[in-house]
Amino acid sequence: MQNSDGQVRLWDVGRRKPLARSVPSSTGDTLVGFEPGDSVVTYLSDKKRVQFYDLTGDGASGTLPVAGGAWIAGFVKGHRLTIDTGSPRQTFDLRPDAQFRTLCAAADRDYTEAERKSLPEGTPSKPPCS
Image 1: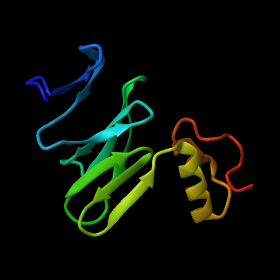
Image 2: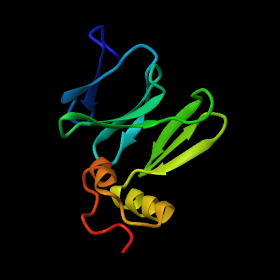
Image 3: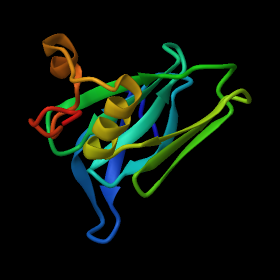
């Protein structure tokens, strides 16, 4: 539930206590789900992006643009994020090593230094296509 201060409070239901972190939210944002890596996934309607908010680190850890039409729905199941915009329906594997392999296969080359800097934390340090 969003509070008047624009924060979504998260609770540890088993302990009946609020978590130390809250997730910033604005009108129209949508909770998509919880990623197994201790992140909350939200859709930022004003920016047309999915945001990953790290509950164990320093907060927002990245965003993903949403391609296609208007946002219809999204959900997280295990390590997979599915986004439905009517056209197309997109599914992403949220594990850094899987992202790394997918990007490597698509590029079929080693990453440049600039590309490597933009990869998510936890991405293996070895050359991507070797």
